[in-house]
Image (cartoon, rainbow, N blue to C red; front, side):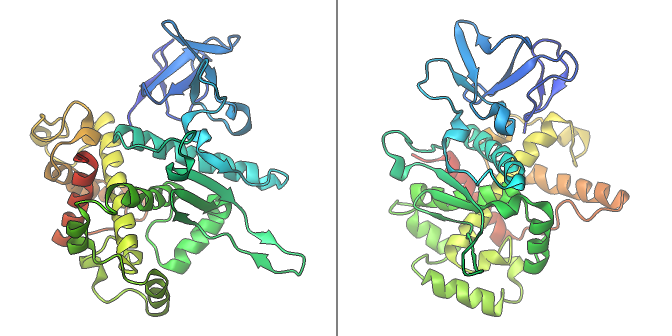
Length: 352
């Protein structure tokens, strides 16, 4: 994530901010420009030259600070338009959960835009577009609970809103033995399934994919059943980024996809804040031989990303230990995992 400044007073503002704390300008983000615009508190529109923008219809409801071009024919921003189902707002906690989910989804869409990945045509071909449903478990009349399963099917991503509740998510993390369990991680993982459908399935890359991640034609339900019954094999961390990645080829891809997003967005943040685990002469300000002016999201080659990421994680782990926290990055990346991450990198940057 990059850094932003208030256009009115140059005070630092953040990706999620709707108001500048210094000058009290109203702020709005335009994703296609990757810019935050400001307007006076008494104005209802934002302007960029002759172009006028309106607030997303969800600004008051869930603090969405994204903007919609005036005359676009819809009232919701790029991110909010792709949410088809929201949780029942008659439940008091659900608005907070929805707010947290949409905030993470906007961060996801930030990365999608930076990588120049498509999200499909929601108006004309909705069946192939990226769509989201945020649902809660339902208590049925017979006293049983109808569970909502987080997952992906043909571009439709369903997320159980309970994942937006920090204590619930932490409980699940401990039960699953996971080092990380975050909302942004859920989003990045699930869109990995969507982009597998878009970029790998029935493509010339399919055989190379199978050579690296395994054969996706293995029975998915049986593979998951086996994983939940027996767990990951011994030594899984030498070949997979997580134990869950061992369950099936598709899950290995989705977990690796999410991990690649973590790395690139983490490196962009580090670069903007001057954080670097290297010595000064080999820092993040690399030439086009490593990555372009677009930063880590525009990296041409994969290895320079990892050359920057690994020492950064060592430094961040040391920082966390200095203040008594768990490791920032509790992973060791083997050559096999490097190969998988490199496949993701090439898939994103060389889509033909």
